[in-house]
Length: 358
Ligand SMILES: Cc1cc2nc3c(=O)[nH]c(=O)nc-3n(C[C@H](O)[C@H](O)[C@H](O)COP(=O)(O)OP(=O)(O)OC[C@H]3O[C@@H](n4cnc5c(N)ncnc54)[C@H](O)[C@@H]3O)c2cc1C
Picture 1 (cartoon, rainbow, N blue to C red):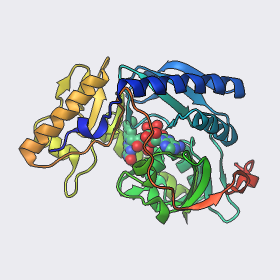
Picture 2: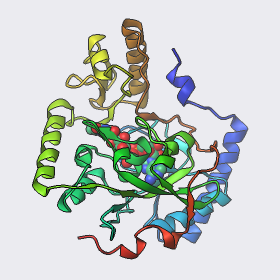
Picture 3: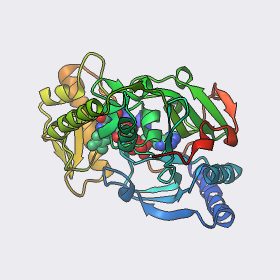
């Protein structure tokens, strides 16, 4: 069985870390000078920015007001050899207790434009919560996003992860995605096929370096009350089955082909298994919950134990769904260039209708 540690953790040699540290300090100084009005949180505890409530301080967390200031920020970072990591609602990430001294995070919190395009498609910026997106679709008589109304992530995070539930996945509703490809500092618009969506992954997740700015959704016409009833039903099922009263990052493991992770974990006798403050939920074995004061090491150790026990008892290898960040995480290894159509900022779809949200 492969090891999560080997797969997820890359440690950089000391001199490389020192170079990164110097670049990062220069980048932060340049950002402060060029974008003095932008919120820039320094040494901000990541426990305050994720649903697990775990994680030490990141060196910097910027919250750009809009897409233009995000692009300017990214170009300053690129000049200083810093690749940022985007942050949505932090509902699928385990941040390390040691913090992230080499990381510059960019939050999509303020990218909140959401409106109907003239052809009936729906345009959403990356920071729009999936619950708001689903409600907006319902209010406009558009069906197909009912499954997303209880997923606590954003449009950007959901697109990268191809979030899904109850038989639906975002890929079934996405028409196109506009992203900023950091290595080239260029915007691309990718159609659904070019995004190469698959179960809980996408081109963006596999290659890194792509910051999702906005997504266009193509939905079916539906009846408002029927859509609302479906959303209520699914959210009730979620409340019944999931430990929503405790901090978590959702399902800890992906669904292995032909099995359900929660059933395998339950059958391996691991429901309620605890390491420090972390526990395999007693309500839903697929969730790892923070029962209070859990460290990232508790969660990691618990996940490793679950993985090896399930492999031993059931012969199935579980793959983490949660993104586990090691302390010296940085995005430096980019994949091949994006296949998509180049766009410029004023060509971003629907920009001219930006005030039409009802
Ligand atoms: C209680 C609970 C229930 C959940 N239920 C479900 C469920 O039913 N189905 C499901 O699929 N998931 C579920 N999740 C997991 C999670 O909500 C989803 O994976 C969600 O899509 C993550 O979105 P986010 O905005 O929180 O992303 P984050 O956790 O902030 O980020 C996730 C990844 O996406 C990247 N990212 C975020 N925004 C962008 C962007 N704009 N551009 C580029 N990269 C970006 C981040 O760098 C990171 O790598 C659940 C989580 C919780 C806590």
